[in-house]
Image 1 (cartoon, one colour):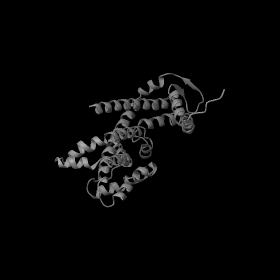
Image 2 (cartoon, one colour):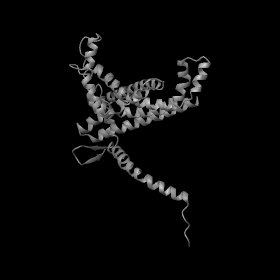
Image 3 (cartoon, one colour):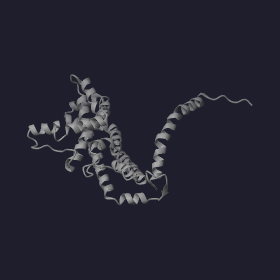
Image 4 (cartoon, one colour):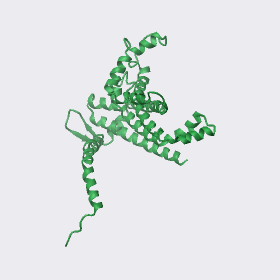
Length: 298
């Protein structure tokens, strides 16, 4: 019997599988396996310094939800994520609207706006900690010489100010991402729509509400989703600025998990915290998609 030659479509399919296979293997090794192993650890009792591991079912989760520090960390994380994403949206949309206008030096301004986003979080934390220093920081000095405050404030060392401070720093660092996404969409909106609105007597605010925002809805949907996931899981900038303090005022679930694993050596409990974070974010994402779908239908 003579074998039928492979069709061009079959050859292209095989070539596609061969080209995609390396990245699939890498993702399985660096993402899927750690995720599955963490999920398995959440149902086991495992000490960091001991090779033994005992299956205990849901006991880690019951211990977790019975601790007040877990609920405090969850509350801090919700406040942190929602506030930082909201501020990033406000700053990002406002900046994108400004950068979409014609003015001298616009190209330079578009370049400079990326500086916070491309700067290492370590550098950002060090610079801000120096500027917020209660002894020789430029922020306290500026507020004192203008008469806004009478004495230096320990911005990162007081429970009252620590969370608002790191929220503002995080919003400053990551709002350029929103700016980039929104600006890219603004440049594709036909100007004829705005011209027609002006002819009909619409103000700038009315044009923004009824033309710009609806045109940005799809971009903002993805941007909010991505920023929400990233900020909910953020560890580095909080750890570098406050380490979760003072008195757990800025301790979020990623930091709680770090303490559970590397300070208390309870890997199973830390894995349970991570698993809860994943399940919580999955639930929020499902609700978010459903709300967006309903709003689209309306």
